[in-house]
Length: 205
Image (cartoon, rainbow, N blue to C red; front, side, top):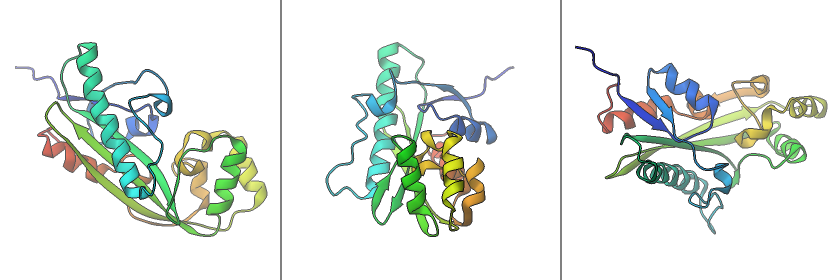
């Protein structure tokens, strides 16, 4: 008897999250929102007044998963688990997301140069009855960066779609002096926390 592998929906456009899920053998289909999630009215990425970075990133991950469940109903899709995630940086209590443009990316990297910061990634899983989430917090230390190498890196275009204006899995690995925490969480999907959440929902992993 052939048993089809269990599948979930991934509510994310991130190729890094697709690669990480595939790495641990999770079968998934993409569940895309109408447009860029920043502009989807059902998922408000504006930070609430006095909202701590941890609460902010968890709220976004949960709202994306819940919105995914609603889209399944609206589109008449097969009911499955929805997995979503959100990543941001905490620098002195300030949320640092994706840069607006190259100038903003340069300013962010200048701020990260020669110091440590926290990378927060929340992962959420939802079905029709409930939503659960987990938070991964990692500390990343950058060496002192030269102005020329910041500009060279920004001109590659790599930082522009990444929280904190860098991708640790790409060229920015040469900036990283130390890590305390989850490497996969820094990339965008903490695999340990993701696995434990999937098991909570009886996904065979």
